[in-house]
Image (cartoon, rainbow, N blue to C red):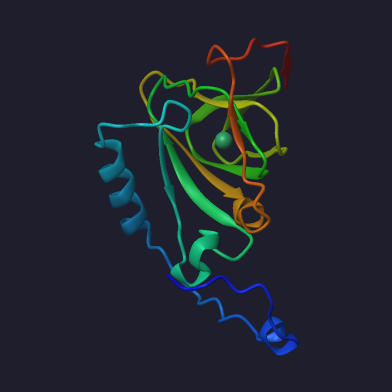
Length: 169
Ligand SMILES: [Fe+2]
């Protein structure tokens, strides 16, 4: 085991980090990975099936870029994810399907082409309202920023599901 360093020089601190590499994920790769994870026996009750786009040049920031993690969420027909909150904020783009997201008790319906902003540290749960067709969301999150600041936190909602107190058109 190497001894921990307690001091670095100015030059150490100012050495530019390695560059982030451009990267592409093809539609075929994304859908193949979604299909593979859908078959996985251990699904997260909060998230269902999520494939995040990891760019290895972001290292342990686990990003698509150094500040953003993008990913696709496949929600099975009728699936209702459990409520939770996290310190990273996000934007959802509805690639396919129809459903709603409950954010801090506010029910927000969505359909293909809609965009939804998810504030940080707000309880949320995604629901596919279609009993026959899957829904697909593209999520873009500032998770790597929280990772870098060491303030990546998550909390489950007690009881699993929030009561709806307001419906947002
Ligand atoms: Fe979430």
